[in-house]
Image (cartoon, rainbow, N blue to C red; front, side):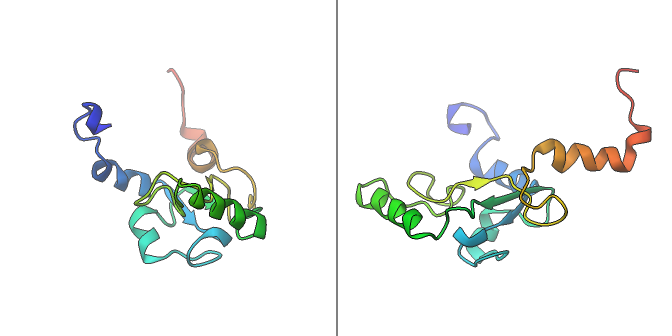
Length: 131
């Protein structure tokens, strides 16, 4: 965004805000396995924040998935194991906003379920709209 003229919106400027939103869990497609976070991931990813983000476990690390990733690399597209890190272009696992623990495990973690619903549970009787 900064390259398009938005001063203060460069990668280094906005990365801390993305990290403060994210609860990253690599899942089976990550470097450290289920629940782990590598040193490299910790530079680019947040941990223990409201928005749950993880790699899709339904296909990651299966023979078909690995063959697909390998074919993309061999075709010249490259491999991006985490498109939020150094390399954004290429074939790799797709990160999804999915609860990876708690009572909603496996369900989509939208911004409203990450931020609004917990606030309503905590402050619901004190929230007013257009008053």
